[in-house]
Length: 235
Ligand SMILES: [Zn+2]
Image 1 (cartoon, rainbow, N blue to C red):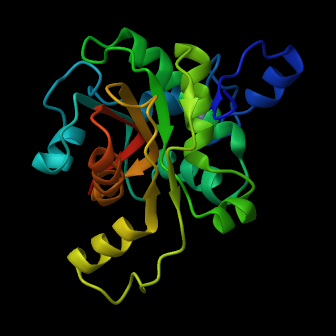
Image 2: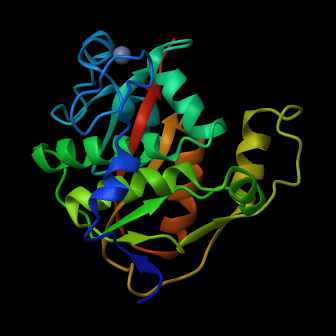
């Protein structure tokens, strides 16, 4: 099935590209399979989302998303090290950042008592012109890292995003949400029906994107939803 991709058998040359020789936040040597060094990693800390059912990410989504479980790896603080790394992922063509975060997420996912391994990983789509400009979809890179560790295949063609026809800056929350909703297109796929899917994105801020994605998927499919992000934005 061409729409399902899974990375297997990475050679050492690719691993060298994937794992950088310097911490993304300072110039020290990074931890093994990581983008941060020991000191930066300690100063950032992770979240407790993998082991706590009613965690901050689930609370942020509130009653609007009916998810089996959800977790972010980190908290995203303005001008913090995680924001810096994600900024590099988003604007600096630093593709390995998404991939390494995915591998770290994958390990914690497998150890978590609240995640039952999903059937598919579904990355949140970006508008294809944006993807072309950037060279990649950062959520797909994150998904690839998770897939590599968990062996859960990626289902990348479930949902697509077209350009939004409304100006996002001029509308109120519900108009923005409706604009977002109409930009997301889901086609019915019978292989998704009744399955468990892990929807992944880089950052969860208000939760509106995940909410719109889940809403469009569940309109057509009966599925079990899990949410995974690199970071959860906090004040
Ligand atoms: Zn460092």
